[in-house]
Image (cartoon, rainbow, N blue to C red; front, side):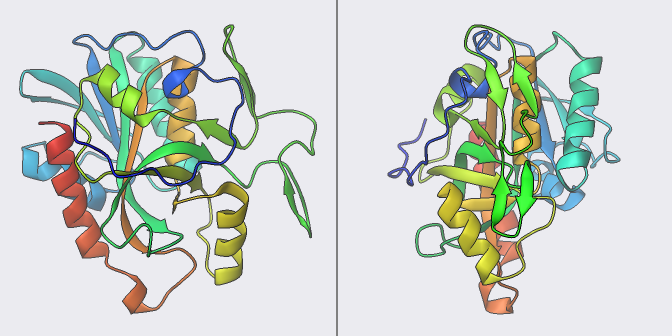
Length: 268
């Protein structure tokens, strides 16, 4: 496993989850069970997996088997956004219950601070947040304002999940027998259904969650893994500055190329 760069600041997240974002029932050893690899779009899938000899991108929501280096995978295009991601991953986990040893979510994301997390940079999520859950007023959203969580995870180490999900990327990678690439940055991420389109929204999320990146699927996929008691790893390469639309704040092609390089090391 490569030596990581210093971690980005991590805000307080605790909601009783066990290591790796599991439900507190303990992370089961992956053994030789399949790993589920999920990308939101066919473009991200092709960038990450086609250079390694994976089959053509499947239709969204349909997982296909893949074997590489003597190891079995299920590979999945979820569709875009937290609802599509939760639906696709949940269906696969239900159909293959007991046969999956861990879950990897990889794709591109926006950076809240290009000085700390530059275009093309690689981030492993140390926590996920879903800022749209709760009671929404003009002053903001209170995740506990409606009086109940999204769900409660079972087990002695489980507990209610409101808007935050702590993760342990290095432990999860180790449990799954994966190698984090050298130079990986570590920091919290947020998941949104509607991407931040202006600087004010970006500043609010960065301030509230201490977030490194914004994407549209990570929380949903991580929560599905937590419910199933599986190790979970989210890797994102940076394609843009959050809240900015000018071309100079974007490099999607560079982020996709960086994603391919990172995944090749991850599965080496």
